[in-house]
Image (cartoon, rainbow over all chains, first blue to last red; front, side, top):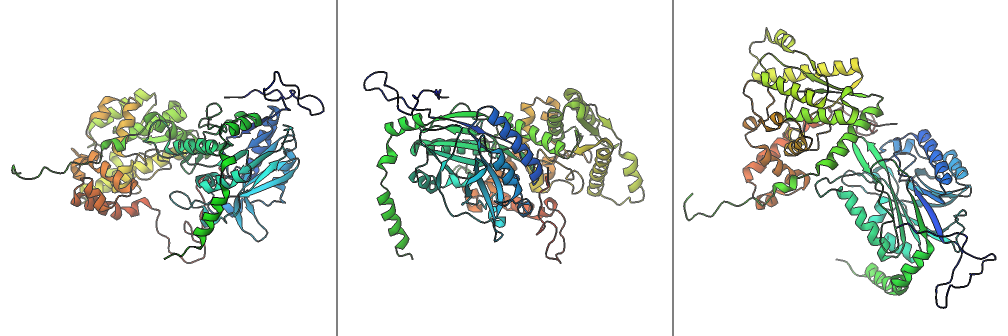
Length: 321
Length: 287
């Protein structure tokens, strides 16, 4: 559940205070982080309205003490875009991301958009904004093109998974939080999470636009059950926080089921997931909890990346029929 | 069957595969009607109410989504329609708290067919369905209400509906529910027993029954369609589940032959950007 952390616990000058008793873990500076999940319903292809809504929610989240606000996948455009994908694209140096970066001075933000490159490729992207600037861009690698999905028809695929040191100035952490972004389908490929874990990730941010389907398998949608399993499994196996922000609303009859949540590094949900309506739950994350989880379950320490590399090398070069 | 013959294969496809979580489905469909109606700037929905279970369920969803004061049930009897149907329709509207409009379609139907005495009952039935559609669309404009459809997934897949008639509407909350699932949802929403328990009928002529006309029961065809369409089972897999091969072939043919009813009209391609082929915009464009 929600961890209470006293940000004033450290002594002036940064030296840890004396331990309460010999052998007790040392006190340190504040380790908490407040993450808001902006579970919203974008208007399909209406950049102007969505931008205004983002600015409104950023202000609200900052007012509630958030250090980071996560918006859903394609939060600036909506999801089933078809030809609207190119019509509603933004550029890294464009006014929309400029306005959002400006708004992301008191609070960091992850926003979703169609990003047009100089050579006119269009990516499904999540952009990390902080301190008035663009800090990191993740371009969705796995574009689902099956069933009701058709992303690769309109979009170019990204080619990297990287963790990065998030500024998070308002949280003033004792060491940088390393954040990695996976967009929706990226999360369904365990190699994505593995690579971020290997890159030292503390918090996986997953913006999503997951359509609700599967109504015959209990009291939850099939898609909701799947995401519940994979977010908790990855968090536990990689002893990392997972912040999953799904959208809500309907597009051409398809519903998006929300259910945004934070999972802690032991695989436990932080409170109840959000429902199917617009909401902006605030979650408190804690580097102390991450440390404790990795002491208790040191799988990352023991991971044999050398074996992964050797076996991957062998598989890559083996003869194929 | 002789004593020595093998027992007929048990159908291992279980009706349980058609079970849905009724409260969850109700919530999703209610949200669907509310959001898709309001996105286009409307507050009201209009439903042709026949006295049958599909339109009763559609009206119930509209009432939950928009409030009964914003639901416009329209009862459109023909003089040969069963009086019980109109009675059931009134019962449904009354239970849901919606005030029905009643439009007798006899004059316009009789006027058209007065010099077409050769028209068979299929032509007359189709004409009635299309007259009802034209009335619903007139009310749609007059009352700023979207036409909410009542075609379920079974009818749509089998093509058991009138194109540009009952198959014409702006929104369809029932189109991904098989008939047996419509029954389950109607029971969950406690619609009148008279409507749930009677044999399904389009009531286009006296004594018409869906299951007699189709030649099979909804329970059987829904189970087959679920395994064939939703689960993408091959013919051999369907046979192994106990479905009769001739039944499988008959239904597959019906689905294929009625595909035209489920698609917009074909457009002859000439330019580089043809509507719905390479001019592809969502309907909720900008909404």
